[in-house]
Length: 143
Image 1: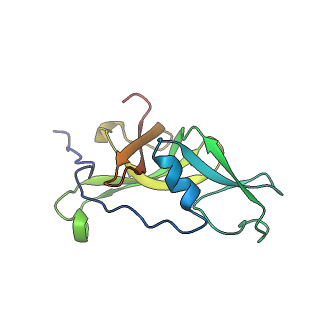
Image 2 (image 1 turned 30 degrees about the vertical axis):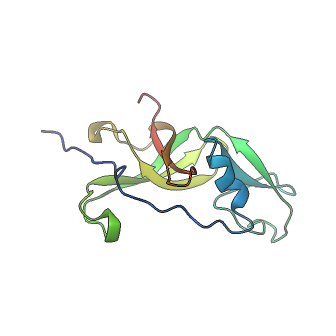
C-alpha cells in the first residue's frame, strides 16, 4: 500500500514582512512570477534575497524573472513536524536545482511518494497567502 502524502497545503501560513531587499521578490509573487537575484559582476544567480552578492560582497545585483523549472536535487519526508505543521505530516521538503543553476528549498506538493526521486523534473506551485502574495512550492512537471 502506498503512503499518502498530505502536502501541508492546508497549513495556515502568515505572509512574510518583506525586507527592503526582498520586497521585489514578494511583490512579484502576487502575479506568480519568480524573481531571483543575479550578480551583475559574475552573472551568477543567488537564492535567497540578500542585500549583497554572495560572490563579490558588492551591492551589484539585479532581479531576473526565471521560469522556476528545475529538478529535485535531494528531498526529505517529514514525518514529525513542529508547531503549525504538526498533524499535517507526512510532507516533503525538497532542494530543487532551478534550470538557471541555483538551489531552492521548498515544499514539494501534488507528488505521489512512488514518483518522488532525485532528478524529478518540477515546476512552481504557488500557494496563496492571506494578503495576495504567494508562497513558492514545487510540483512534478506531470502534475
